[in-house]
Image 1 (cartoon, rainbow, N blue to C red):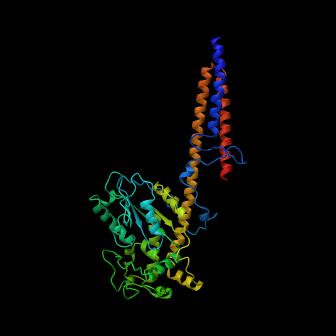
Image 2: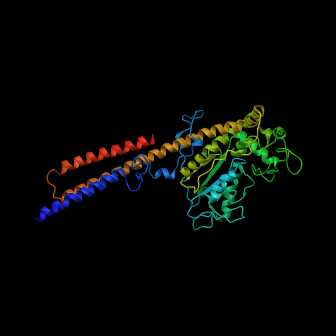
Image 3: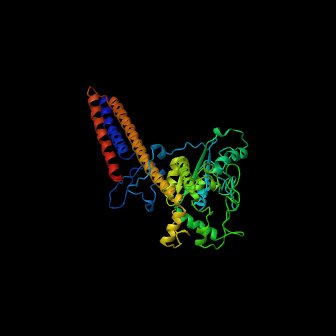
Length: 434
């Protein structure tokens, strides 16, 4: 009698557990895969996993071209950028801020918009923030808004690489050799014509950057090596034609100059080699330094810049980046002839930007593919885990119910049925994503 009662109890308990396990196949608890709907599309709606929430798709105004025109040969090593940034250790992030590339906005993101265990302390009314490591009075960020212009106003690659280690060791009161600290350089680039026009408008309003040091090989350039384009305090109200006509204007090919190793071409001594050879060496150096940087972004692709930074450093921004196209440069109307002139004056920057843009978009494409593979692997592991739990439950229920010699056969049937359910689930998720 008691054995018969146990069998009667076993049947409804097993049915309930089987339904619960089946529901876990379709709607795992930690994935938000299903939710009730009130519209005419049905009761349930498939959703991507929580993994997508960490790396949301950029807005539609930044759609990736279906086919990227290939001009340059990039290796997987060039595309795969993942930095194990030890914010608690000795690592330092160094922001190389090129004028009129959106660097001010990006710099503020670094000090005010990153989710950190110990956020940067930004006091109202102060230009600089205190960005200390957790539990240490040491800075993990070298930038305008954290350490100020410690290596000079808008210091370039040549200046930063020789200055930053010395300055950071002095600030942190360390005597550690340079080899024991990792310095991760990052920067922003912009379309050369837009950047050039933006700099012209900025200079027209009174900007000079005349306090910049331009240090190279231990000394600044002489007056003969870098003559001024104007007399007086500034160049306020300069017409575009005059701005373009100054041969020593540092706005010309600024991005290449600030990213290259200037010691390779005799710094600012223009007589050390021909103009053609100088341009070739500078461009090659700028490409190599940019490619080997931990990260760079493009002003024209704000959301993709955010995505790649997060993927590279494993850090998350609090608020999404905003794409602003209504800039002062965009409001300047120029003729095709003037545009060609600007492109000619910035021929090296144009070549660098084409290189940088292709590498940037390929890195984005590569990271999206990597993310999808990681997501598929995670789903497969979750599915296998649920299948193991399912078989364990069935075996335990069968044991409690007094199963006989057909146990192995029934387990094989249940395993086959679980595999069919898993296959259906995977196919459904693929259909939604397509």
